Length: 366
Figure 1: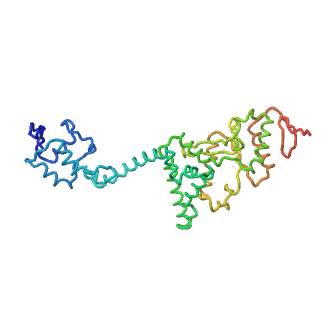
Figure 2: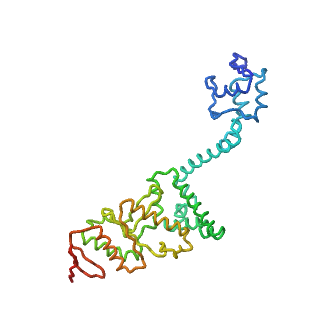
């Protein structure tokens, strides 16, 4: 095969190169010094064995081609004819073997999919077209909280209860936990710690609010610590009540955000109000049927939440809704007194009593 330069009339002006073997043709394509533009096949390795018969017919001594004719008419249209990297044939006709071809297609689809998803999910218009996004329901007249509930209902087809019913308790829990872990990892893949924190906070839009039962303890507790000069202003404590927000800590190792009920950061004090229905109370405790978490998952997460607080330097107290508000309030006061030796007089407001306390002991004052 001879590669030539032709005039406008087709007359041969110069023989540029002679190619007599397939190996020489491969070298010619891969070496830009010959002036051959091969941007569209810059991933070329070697010809596929399936193309050898056709290539042998090309490199016969009596064949004469111009550079453009060889590339665009003979090679691109007949050998490199597959244009999309999502096609296995694209890689096969460029000399990749069968196993590597599967890997290359998978790598391309993964990269392209992530890039496409990132662009799409940053578009409000795209979210409005997906029933699994709250924007879809907001556009149709639902409130934000109602929209979140709508999305939750649509996504509840895969539940722990259904897995246990179908596969048995042990296998069902394992299958559910594995899928949940995989799903969480996919949510956090490629995100920075700041992005993960923002994402977790956005999920808690209808949570992080103090329960009515906890407020029976925390509101009197607030009065106590304010009267005791333990805090100087509202910025020194955190609680999910009125315009205040709950305090959170981020566990970097597990990429998870934990919110706490009542926190005084400068004293490094955390108080958690636990409901016996939702939090593990012992061996006989079981999670509610509609809770898509196993007992083991709930216990491990609570332990991780406690460890995160302690490792961050906080002292932690847990109180329970099975105790009276008066008893829980006294526990909280004793807990704060243990870690805060205040000098000014304080007041016990349990049951409305006004008992003044000096540093050395109680002095009843009515």
